[in-house]
Length: 102
Image (cartoon, rainbow, N blue to C red; front, side):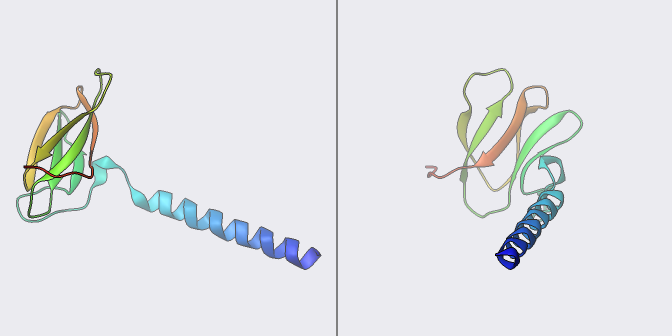
């Protein structure tokens, strides 16, 4: 019984360490990976004053945009490349969602 409890504690500690490492390495919207030429980052990112969505795929994508002062998010389609969404005072985040554009 003691050996099983010890193994469970070890497994829980290892699982916690993996989760913690994943959280530390995941970064934030401000540290999105570099994209294709002409796209500063894939996904949502901000400059000092503006919010963008960088789509690194080759087709249009549907995104959901979290507007700071609006009660519901908006959905819109964006082309490949960089799309200006608004100022950082207006936009909190944006992410790709399921759905087609057309």
